[in-house]
Amino acid sequence: MALTIVILNQQSLMVARQIQAALPDTLIYGLESRIPAAEVEASFANFGDSLRQLFAEGQPIVGICAAGILIRTLASQISDKRQEPPVLAVAEDGSTVVPLLGGLQGVNELARQIAAALNVSPAITTAGDLRFQTALLSPPAGYTLANPDDAKAFISNLLSGATLKLEGAASWLSESQLPFAENAALTVRVTEYIPNHSPDCLTYHPKTLAISMNPRATDHPSALIAQALSAANLSPASAAVLVAPLNQAADPGVHAAAANLQVPARFLPAASPELLARAAVGASGRLLVSEPDYAIAVADLPLDPASIGQPQGQLAIVGTGPGSAEWMSPQVQQLLQAATDWVGYSTYLDLVEPLRQGQQRHDSDNRVELERAKLALNLAAAGRSVALISSGDPGIYAMAAAVFEVLETPEPAWEQIQIQVAPGISALQAAAARVGAPIGHDFCAISLSDILKPWEVIERRIAAAAEADFVIAFYNPLSKQRSWQLEQAIAILRRYRQPDTPVLLARDVGRPAESVTLRTLATFAPAEVDMRTLVLIGSSKTRTIAHPNGVWLYTPRRYDL
Ligand code: SAH
Image (cartoon, rainbow, N blue to C red; front, side, top):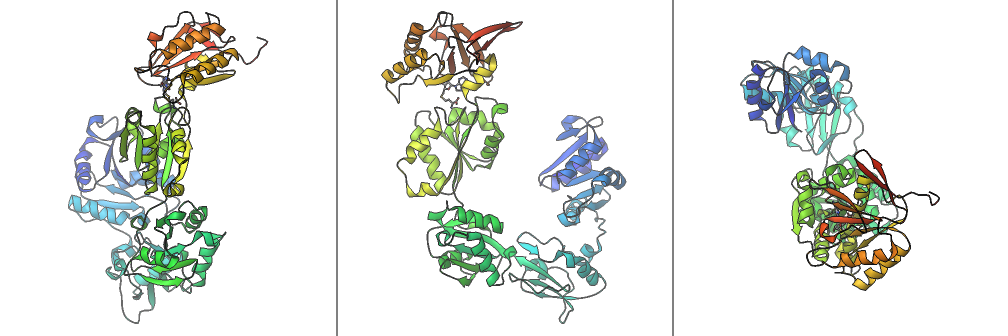
């Protein structure tokens, strides 16, 4: 997580920059009234509020100020030492580095790095850390301390001179400066097995177990795995990964069992549980349990699940709304962030480009919708997390239907993908919102594009909708290739509706070039319309209300008005 250096005056800037140069991902925050905004990454007005907010967010903090200022500011927030982020005070002249809080989050290590950058010795006061150069309480990633409640007494025994022995293997322990001795009274043990409890032994569970299963074998996969571990006396804390055959990646049981174990589910080409477990731990691993429906294998070092097979592929078909980010749902924003790959028409990808953080773009032309849908499905089948991007709502004249059209001729690999559709605000809703409530009563949408459906069908539908007195939204009203359809559509409407029927032309709604124009059936001219316009035709009830800056357009819900 990024380190934030908080400074209160310009003299501190040099020391801050020295620290920043040595530690990647460091931001400098300056007090607005004393340090010009251009000289720092961000400014704050209120020191106390800003510091408490950073602390509450769990951000590591370096204050270039007196330790007392930090202590007094954060005092009311200090409650849980397992949660608190590292907080350090550094003297304004860089002569001292004092770790204050966050012992379990590596504050002493941070203090050493900062002190090295400033060429001074850190003022480390945690006796256990000083003596042993290792934090027994916060083991490195891949190891879990099974009995933290025993650690305090254990460490104080060490501090009063007791020695310890190591059972099992872990270089972070064997290479530490802990006082190892033969025949020691205390023990640190590294094991996958559930220990008999003893306050004289700290047990660390390494995440070395790969558990494989055949999800079709049971209705209760979580219980099956829990029983399998318990029968072998293995700790769930040592589970690193759940592996299953790729052709069962969509099985909810696998995901339930993985969630229950708090490990990722990964998938390998179909094979027996024994072979899957062996494949997951690699050649240096060993098989511990092999049953027809599950197997457990152990690796010699903690496993990296990301390097095993692939995850279940994800396809999120998202609608980004008509334009501006404020009209994009939080769900869509979250899915865009979580994706590894973005697939879409270049214009829509460009609209969301400011949100891109490392996702791979797969641009395509507007026309090739089915190919685009296949590309998205194939990427997801290979284990990627794909966002297929439409503007507006993805289910309205957009990519969701293209995906399901492709899925009508299924491929086995696609059946293992998790597919979801995330809705968006459609152009129709956005245009209506700009002028009042024109779709307050029955309405319909008709696409004037005759690329995928015959013009005769469209004509009949317009006539039927006009006769039924719907408010009508025309999507895809015209394009360079389709110039005459809108004119014809209007001619049909004129047979059923009065010349003074309101017609709304909403172009680029929610985008910088937005324009919204009100006409009537009589004054309407297709020349004002292009493919970025939504045309909304009022019903016989749709009316306007004048207001000082223009008119509202609305369709009453009642027929007695
Ligand atoms: N899925 C989109 C519609 C795609 S069809 C949605 O739900 O909005 C493309 C048509 O939608 C365009 O020809 C135009 O008629 C309309 N449209 C899309 N975005 C628009 C916008 N920002 N302003 C006005 N019309 C828009």
